[in-house]
Every structure is written in C-alpha cells, then in structure tokens.
Length: 455
Ligand code: UD1
Ligand code: CA
Image (cartoon, rainbow, N blue to C red; front, side, top):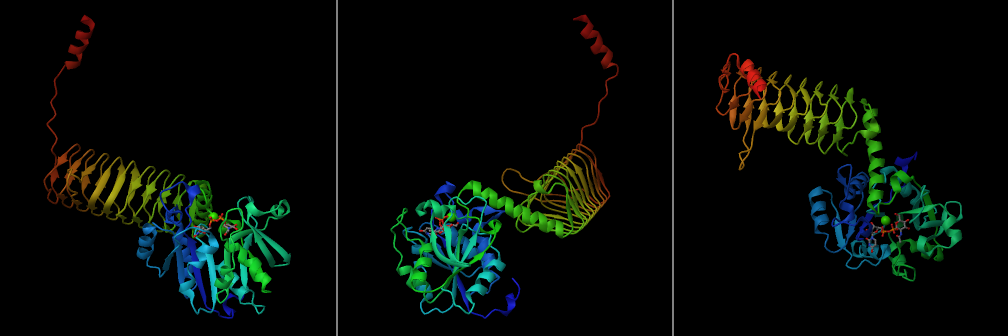
C-alpha cells in the first residue's frame, strides 16, 4: 500500500455489473437498491469510484430497472448506463459496454454491484499491480472467506499468478478444497478485454458466459494474470437477505468504530445503529439501543440516553436527549436543550436552553430560548387537512397538558396554565388559561360512605 502516489499513471475506467435478477433476495426492488446503513448498495460503489478520478463509469442494468436509472440521475454521479436485455452471464454483461470503449486504451475495472463494500485502497492496489512492468492482461481480486460456499475458486500455478477461475458448480473436488475465492472484481487491459470476451463460451453448468473464463483465455494467449488479495469484510457478495444482514453488521461495526475514534462514548456499541452519513462530535455519550436514521448531526458534549430514534436532526452542543425520545426530520435543536422521555419532535426548532422533559409532541413549531414546555404538551399541528405552525417566544412557561391549536403564537415571558387548550394568540408577559373553574362540594365523601353501607 505504500508508494500509492508514485504509480505509473495509466487511465482507468470502471464497469459495474448490476443486471442480475437478484433472485435470492426475493424482492420487487433491484438488488443494488437494497440499503446498507440507510444507503443503497450501489451508492457505496459510486462513492468509492468517485475518489479514483476515473475516465468513465459504465453501469450495466437489466430491463425494467427505471428506478435505478432515476436514482443514478438524482445521485449527481456521472455514469453511463447500458442495458443487458438478456441475462446471459457476467461475461455477456461486460460485453454490453463494448461500444462505450471503442478505441479505449487504459485499465478497465469490473465490479459487481452486489459486492459494494470494497475500499478505494484495494482498487488502487490492483491498479498498481496492473501497471507493473510485466503488463499483466488482468489482475484478479481474491480473498479467503470463512465460508467459501457459492464463490468461484482462483487456481494458481505460480505464486501470485492465476491459471484459471473455476465456478463452484463446475469445480472438481480438489478444486473445491482450494479456499482462495474470486471476489468478482478484476482490472483488465482495456485494449484486449473485449477481445477476450468474444472468445467466451457458455459450455458450463449454468449455460452462461462467465466473465471469470477470461483468465484462462488470456493465459492461453500467453498473457499473465496476477492476483491481489483483500479481506472478506470488503469483498463479501450479497446474494440474499441473510448476506445483506451480514453486510449491515460489517458496516455498522465500521461506523461504530469511527464514531468512537472521533471521541464519542458508546456504552453498548453493538446496539447503536448509525446511518452512513451520521455525524457525531467529541465527548458525545450514546446510550444503549439508539438508532440514527439519515441526516443526523450531533455536536460536541451531547448525551443521547438509551432507546432514542433520530433522523433528519441537528443537535447542537451540550444537549441531553432521551431516554425514549424520537426526533424526526426537520428538528433543529440549539445548545443546552433538554429533551426527556417520550418526547417527539418533528420539523421544529428549539432555542438555546429549552426544556421539554416529558411526554410531549412538538411538530411544526418554533420555541424561543429558555422556554419550558410542561409534561404532556401537544402542538395540534394538523386539522385533518393541512399542517399549521406553533410559535412560542423565549422564557415562556407552558403548563402541563396544554394543547396548542395551530396556527397559534405565544409571546415571550408568557405563562399558560396547566390543562389549557390554546386557540388564540397569547401576548408577551400574559398568563393564559382556558381550564373550567374548579367546583368543590363539601362532605361528599362521607355521603358516599353512608350510601355504600346501606347496600
Ligand atoms: C460471481 C462470480 C464468482 C464470484 C462471485 C463473487 C461469475 C461467473 N461468478 O458469482 O466467481 O466468486 O461472483 O461474489 O462471474 N450480472 C449481470 N448480468 C448477468 C449476470 C450477472 O449484470 O447476466 C451481475 C449481477 O447483477 C451481480 C454480478 O453480475 O451484480 C454477479 O452475478 P451473480 O449472479 O451474483 O454471480 P455469483 O454467482 O455471485
Ligand atoms: Ca453475487
């Protein structure tokens, strides 16, 4: 991995194969759209490739994958899409990109859409090996997983030199004993890749044109094929929901580690779930069983207690949240705010020092600095037809069990009596309450007692 920067520069392009049906996922959704840590698999690959300054990226899709096409268009990545009308194998899939590379001289990395966790450095290592003076036709990325089942095997005849790749279904017993597996990722000499592919045959157990057979063909032409090895955690293939769950665990472990390295304490790391884009500051403490959906940013010194669910939320310094709080998209929490148990916040901004400690819903609201929201306060933001806003000034006190019927504005330094239903604006410094007057009937208790005795 050293000397990465001093590589002989040879331009590189990529082809991502994602036309397969993903049958074992048993899903309406194309496989590459299934999410890991909240982000579709495909985006992991596009993101990794974007760090490599490639010449071009071609994505091979199957018919009826409009959803993926739209998604790629929205992602902002520059990708050429080609359609493989019939799924005749990984070799046939690469062939669909031939017209995108006419006259091309340089490397072509072929990646599989269902192996999305590969890192930039591993691809760089392959590019380096490919650029070595012996000019290998191909560099194949191998790995030795714990469970080798389902993977093709790399057959070496000299150190680092691959003679052929054998698919599991076509392998002999001896070949199956070899634990060095094919990750599917290759980097090839772009000038000859499509020539090699023209020579593929489909005489194998699946009756498919296997990309993996290009190794044997290149060797028959006297060209070298080298192997580079990677790890299971970045190269595992995702063919089923069970494998998707393994990829999720791998990714979560990575995200947990990264948060801890940046100075967050995770009391029980294995129970905290991050999104690929969660940002967590220093001296943040995260309790057990906290879930982060997309777009959450947590500043330094924040404590998130057990069993919170957060998405689309920004939390500024030194706040405490939870236990059992739900922060939904559009929540903007200023410094020193306390959000307690069973509080839900949606599309609301809370000013510095606000306290909302128990059993409340604040939706479509703006709350001024140091305002105290009593237990059970609800913003009634929806009238069955449209959403409306509640605005509360600073240093106000909202009594317990208040219903704020939006649209409504409560001023600064205002006090709302407990149990009120507020439908009209409340001025600065006013006390407002809507509760019915209390009636007392004396000696009612002893009357009741007599009635009970009589029966
Ligand atoms: C493939 C490899 C195997 C390797 C494993 C690594 C082949 C023949 N086998 O097996 O050696 O160990 O990946 O995970 O390459 N695809 C198309 N069009 C097709 C067929 C597949 O685009 O006609 C795409 C799929 O969407 C997928 C990728 O190619 O992203 C791999 O196909 P898949 O069927 O999953 O191959 P494996 O059996 O996993
Ligand atoms: Ca696969």
